[in-house]
Length: 282
Image (cartoon, rainbow, N blue to C red; front, side):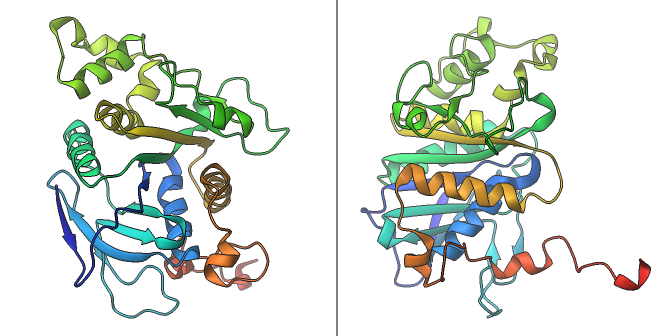
């Protein structure tokens, strides 16, 4: 993985916390990264080139009006006022190459001096057990702060540790050994193992990223929410609010000049789900 800086720009050492979206159902992590870049007036400092991510290109994603600035596959933004770096990923990893991508990203992050990585992702609502929507969207987390994945700061915010994370369970243990380069014959999973329902969480991109970043000795926190495929903008707003509380970020209003408590919607979202329906059909 190679970092290509924008002209006269570079990665700042004081932006030591990195936001990373992990692709999953509804693309909530990516939508949240969009909101944070747009609302915090983060500037693009460069992009990453990696052979395991499918190439893509598009027009200016943030505006406020199209400037013809190309958006690329993996872009790095920085918000100096929040000492925050944000990675935006716009296309999926090549099938079967998630571990290679996770290793490359972990090497880059560790080499660039980041101290804390916050991974944002979503989980399939169909896998959710003991559903409780009485308090709105429930946040779940996994942290490297303790061996069992718990984090006191997350608990104080009312979030629940993802109970399906168990470092002693074979699928999570396999990921850990793979990230540390200690895979043995006993770690090799059979086809039956791969199809087990309990393997769902350990098979997601956030799990690979968490394991490889953790193996580098970095502090890693995964913030997760359950959702269904569809219009996931509301999920992104709630996940962005969670990140803001967790990292004690400057409020979007003070960072972007927006009145009230609204996040700044990116230019690219105007066509996110196509134009509105023709009212004459009703």
